[in-house]
Amino acid sequence: PVPKSNPPDSSSSTRRGFLSKTFIGASGALLSTLPSPSNAVFTPGGTLVDREVGINVGNAEASPSRAVDNTNVPFGQDYYFKFGTAAQWIEPGDTEYPKTMPFTLSQQRYDALKKYGDRVKKGLAAIDGLGPIIDSADFTSIADANANEYAMRPMGLMANSFMASENTGATNELYLAR
Image (cartoon, rainbow, N blue to C red; front, side, top):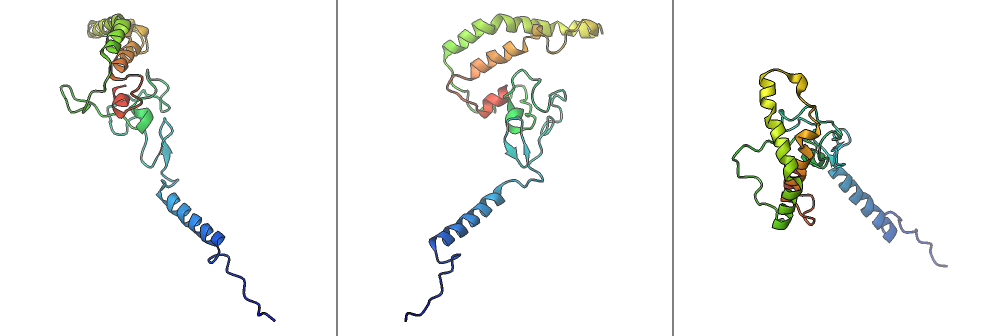
């Protein structure tokens, strides 16, 4: 008679046991790198981050009227949408940002100027006209901030056309410019 041998230990000596232990170990290592549920939050764009998210985080002077879900802005896909924090101000005359200007065809820039130029000029004139009205304290004649006469959306569309082509994609520079 042949002596009975003990069956192999399924947890260590078989291929199935080895793969099972490897998978469990790799899963544990992967899960340990994710943000802990206690401080993990989503940005408006859906990115899971392990830091504070908010309309004034990173820039206390940012507009407090921005909706947390980014619904009341001319361009929803902006810096706050991607990073969940307020963008830093770019100081006047600062040439450090952006490091390079995105390439767009000159014809695209001319087309954008032709398409939006008149509305942008009218919007700038409307904004310039606010000075005397504010000085006279006649605030009732000031249009709402979302009024079309300020041409905020055409200004943004023109700037976007100057900085992005169809092939640019969503870059950090473009998000900040918006």
